[in-house]
Image (cartoon, rainbow, N blue to C red):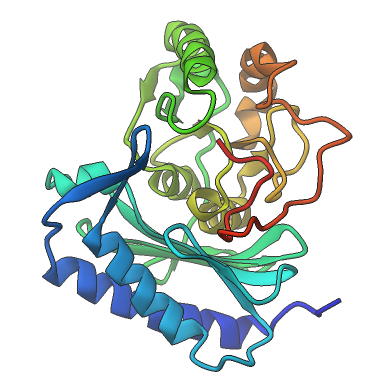
Length: 291
């Protein structure tokens, strides 16, 4: 089993890769979008950014750290690996909305231990390493102190895409309706990575993401956790790459927020003791915990 990487070296490498990614995104507009599946878009900018970051991080083919990208799949170690969403919020990006993110995480033994998330069109960058706090543009950040749901602004996941679209739509609709009736506000920004870092800096008080695609959540989970958020699965167990959902919340909202997710019991969005270890498919995509 590999030991955890040196955080100083890893963070330096991640920041350099994100520098290249941000430069590319700011200088290239997407020309077209194609769909990998139902409502699962990709543009040529997504693919180009992933190529740039992947080449930067695994230029040495003998590196002990693997790589998992949303568009190109996995290579190398399954214990310790970089995971990238080159543009989280592709549809927003294609329409000229600034609400999109580049999210690069580092996972070790199923747990995100480092994250760098850039919001290129808003001019912010967030990062964190395990046990070292979370930062936005070099300043230490922390979650909000909100303790009441009726005073909470909550980010919420998009409705269905991929497999079980109809089920996800029904569950999202139910949770959406119940939370809208109780929270101060519910928002769907179209980027899980953005939701998570906005919990980290207090812009949002919580976010509820049905599903747990590792490239969407790994970087933001590490950052939110280091900022003081509870990052959990739907049953309140600690978040890992094996989780079925990704919930990040300021601690004061935990007991009021989590009961709204009990509607997920008995579905694939609810964890169980028999869930398998995450597996890389022949295409490189994780099979466990993914919508």
